[in-house]
Image (cartoon, rainbow, N blue to C red):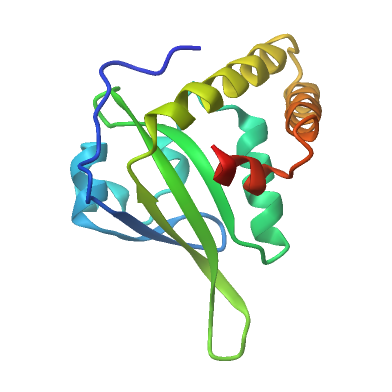
Length: 169
């Protein structure tokens, strides 16, 4: 599936930063995030982070991210997002749990950078195959299960887990 509208590209030294609560609702967004996403701060605060989810991003990739975060693990991922004006932008994301003084997870912190174009060519092919598999199933649970199985299978053939694969690109 092709991403929405025109592509917006982060500057070489731009860094998107956002924070969410445990449910994925935005509690902080820096100016770079607001600029690239074409949203105002008032339109983002307290909204689910999937406000910027692109239809060109497989649901199963987000399941992988949330599963890892749920286990207290950090995640590296290539993500295509959509903007308020239905454009899109790619990022290389590093997402980590945020902890309180008692060591309890209270939310999530994400830094996102401009991705490597060669890596995007490879990850795009992977995501396109997973999206096609998800689209074959009308039932949401079946779609997610089938996409997750294919994602796991495709990454598994590399002999790496998702993070290792992403970092190898």
